[in-house]
Image 1 (cartoon, rainbow, N blue to C red):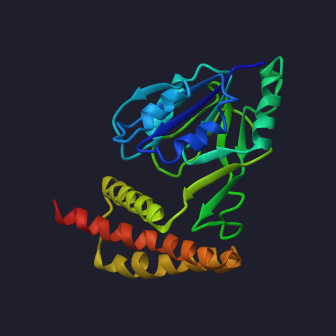
Image 2: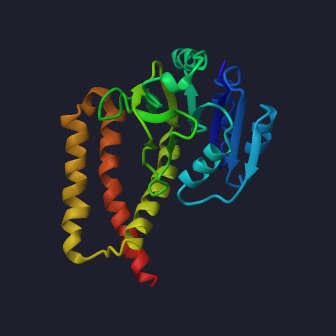
Image 3: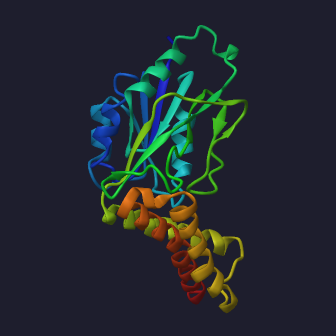
Length: 259
């Protein structure tokens, strides 16, 4: 059996971490948690699962800490998780089947897309571009890494990417309060990213970023991708996805006023 490493980056995840680690404690040969100086019990909970815990700073782009955790992994097969994700039975079975290969170099794939189910306002979204929501999280050692440039980026892979069986269950937004906390973080990151790229909020941009782009995004998710099938949660998700651009643009303008 090949060694399986499960790696995470965390910050104040005491509400989610037990659920996540419970789903992999019987799968992982090692668990590595890079924690961004949590102020709750995150590190203590991780240690209860015999995880190797590394304390660092909480960076605006948390993919930097994710990559740090990935770099510390010593297994031949690596699964990168967020603390609000749960590995289902079929995905564990798939990963165990990989670990039984005597020679991993003979596999045609070196990384795998993992389908993800997203919980939003109490409902598992099935439309609106939110399913199967594939993410590259499972890979062979030294075959993938994160660019660390954006909060929604995919791993860069050196080789072929296949499809894993099973799902990650993503409990990212069980309440609207949880969603808004992340919404605020992501829009602030986008505004700072724009500022670093030299973009400036101008009057001519108001129509595009405040009206046109949000409207197009809403219509794409709600009508083209049939978000209406998911009822009220589908409507709210499409609406807030569009407003992401409006709020980020306003925050860019705010950043400019501080200069």
